[in-house]
Length: 209
Image 1: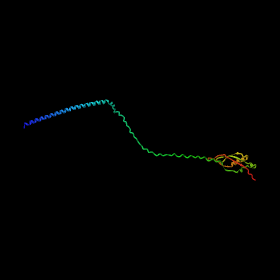
Image 2: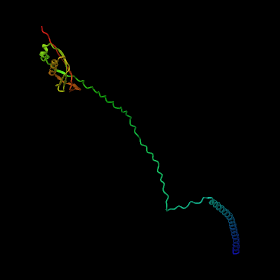
Image 3: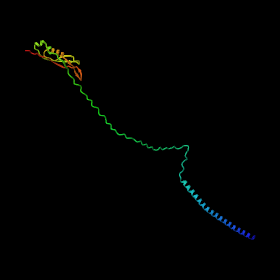
Image 4: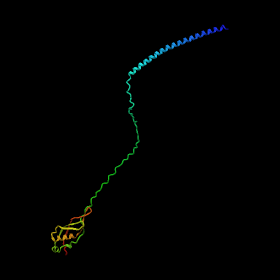
């Protein structure tokens, strides 16, 4: 029993040494592979970084200069654009009413004034009462025309011989006859006016048998 245990332990040690050596070799290989791969990748990464920096520098050279710094103390004016407002108001169209012009006023009819009226006799005296006796005895006859002027009251203002009868006595008797008449004054436009008409006075004898 005692001779068996030392041999078994030596074999165990040998196996352990081999395993340990294999582990070390594996670690060395892994480290080498990792180092070589890391170096390659690092080289590539470094080249990429250098190329990127070169490209970025070229782009920076081509870019325009930056704008001047903005002074924050002076703020730019704020431009407010008012929105366009469209207001639509409905308009009610009122019906069109045609207003007819008023008819023209009726023409004013100007009536002519009433025609004037001549002197009108209101009292006629008896001529035989004014026939002169001397003219009768001498057989004097004649016709005298007397011009008389009648005022607005119908009274005689004057009486004159316009045409003689041929006998002075008969003319004087004719004036007396004219003054014995009564007249209504003449009118013009409905109002009494003065006028001077003529009045014939005829003297004639009537023979009795």
